[in-house]
Length: 67
Image 1 (tube, rainbow, N blue to C red):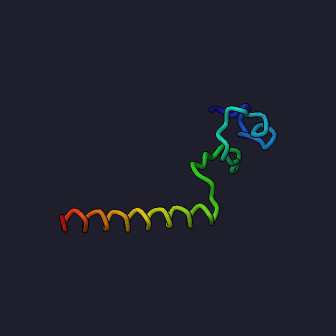
Image 2: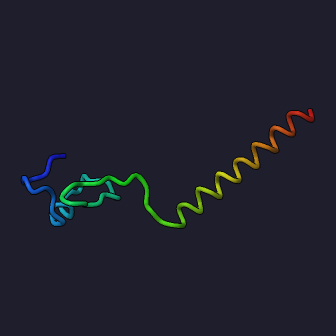
Image 3: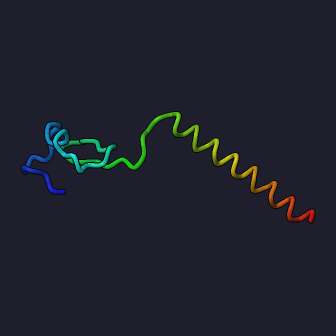
C-alpha cells in the first residue's frame, strides 16, 4: 500500500483503512504489520503448548519402542 501523501501515513489514515490487518501499527509515517499480538499471555500460551506437544511426542516414542 502506498501512502496518500509524500509525508507518509497519518493516524487518521490508519483509522480509515478497513482493509488493513487488525494488528497494523504506524511508525514514523510507515505502516507496520504485526503478525501476532504482543501480549504476555500469548507467549505463555505458546510455551505451554510447545511443552505439552514435546511431552506427548516423548510418550509416543516410548510407546513405539516398547511395542
